Length: 344
Image (cartoon, rainbow, N blue to C red; front, top):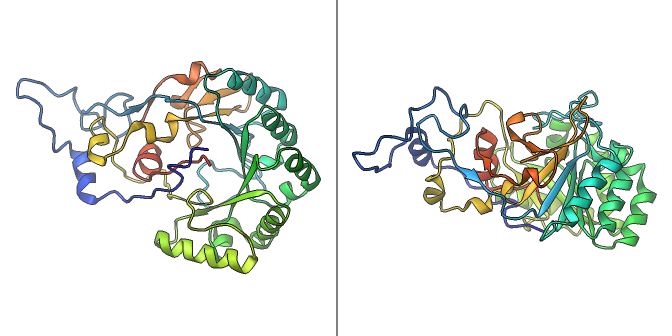
């Protein structure tokens, strides 16, 4: 699994943000004009930033994680859910087992093939074909990561999940969304009574021998160390063997807001930040979705941008192997400056 970026949280220094936004620090020869005139607003042109610089892009190095969004329907309506999942949001329809199977077949023919298949939603266990999709992915030889709130939709499938875990030991990982290590914080975002049901699901998974990880939120104003210490104490009380200091086992995602003012990522940012485009999530992953009313699924560059048509790359994995232009604030906040990845 690609664990290098799971949670390398880095806060962008104010001075550097000013440089990126203003275009300061450039040293073109006097005879060279700027690339083109600055655009009116940020993230409004695919190739050029608001300061007139070339926008950064990321090439697909190798497809390591292939994501499937099983549909946006969810049993919860969490505060600030990036995909706005809820019991009523069906903007992304349920993928079928046969649709997923076609992409798995294409994935096995890649050289090299992906190492990991990811399922996200919505709540993946609300999709009526989820068990079959998990089985097909595991039978094809992939490791599988499934994101879940571990509540009733998952718990009603206990027998089927136990069967998969017996047949494919160590190949199926469940990442449980637990927004804070205290009930009050978790339920502030997920609603009353959500804590106990999620904890019950987490305990069942751990006690049943599944590979389990946890995803938390960073909305609380606590440091990374404080958050990890809090989760470590919780896991100890529960008797759950999850190392809260392992960034792959406890993933703390940067908080994202649609209206947040963030710097655009230019080509020269890689040198300023000391980062490589190969470290960004879209260098190693793609996501398959099916939009409501669509005839067939589409492949997107990113798990975070399911509704933005600019990030729809094609109908096959081959078509979706093109470079991705970092033309969204989430590209900056989550992936480049936040250093996060949805993969395991």
